Amino acid sequence: MSRKKLVILGASITGLGVVRDAMANGLEPLLVDVSDGIAFRSSLARRILCDGDEQVLKTLLAHEICAGSLLIATSDSWIEFVMLNRTALDDAYDTVLHASNDVLEICTDKFMFARWCLDNQVSAPRFYEIEEGGIPADCDLTYPLLLRPYKGVMNGGGGEVPKAVHVSERAALLRWVKAFRDAKIHPIATQSLLGTDLVQYSVGLARNGALTVSFVAEKVRPHAGQCAVGCYVVLRENAEVEALARDVAERLGYFGIAEFEILHVRESGENYLIEINARPWIQYGLGPKSGHNLLKVLLDAGNYDASNEKKTGVRWLDFNDDLYNCFSRRVGLVRNGSVSWRDYVASVFRANAFSKWKFSDQAPFWYALRKTISDVGRRYL
Image (cartoon, rainbow, N blue to C red; front, side, top):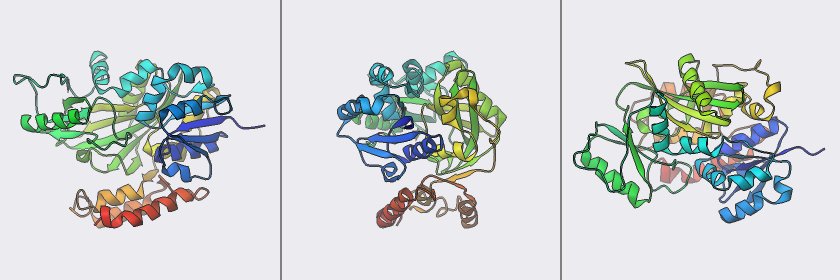
């Protein structure tokens, strides 16, 4: 008897994590993307490389692909693709493993998300709407601000603007607003918490009806002020942070897998919900490693077994990105003394969950290592 297929949109590190988890759950993973990615090196999945979104949709709706299958997206851009084609995909697949489009829109549109948090009295940074006509001279803004795109750009591959920009005065704000607009990306400004003593938390969560499974991790590197993707992330127990994420998921009526990004201000003790990634995320491997079977929640909530869950003891590492964040000329945390050599070496040796390495699926790791060696002169020196 053939296994049920899980069609995975996106061949990134996140897609690789989902491929491996699909196999552990008895699913047949099938990767689909429009560009090459590290997950395509996995020996565990079938792979289809398409020439544009139109071919992707045609591929996804082919009977031999969608019949009896499940579908999941692993990046913001693929979430948008699912939203645009939701009716056809819902009709074709057994289950699209994502929340409704109304909920996804709240999670992916920064303005709608900020407005929803305000209306529902969820602790989140104050936001300011930047109108199409610009910023009025008398606009009441309290600096510093964090400027971000309405929609996530970190998975889009464009590279025109960063994920977030910290601005301290009007001239810098105007300059960055122009940069966003030139890239055809509409920005939103929010209260910036940078400059305070912050702890970055990530709550991994899966919800299906009455069952919610979650865990908390601290993003140790890079530091909060860098506004960058976590490369060294450690499982931590924090009941307040976890409760905030679970409460928001319940209020949204959320279905699916998500990452809730929360900042904790040490001085005040307050927690602020920053954003929700309404999909698997880069550190997705923390779930399987800590006994939190997020896919199982969506596949068979009634038979979920929580006996193997643990809330501490897992340290996830993306060695390549961590090397850059610790030793590059631009942001090197070890180079500039923010992290000691001793702490860096100790953290690497203590890591027990990895973005790329898996003994039974080694090809992605060796591919990444070769790429790092070939890029070392350009990126690290």
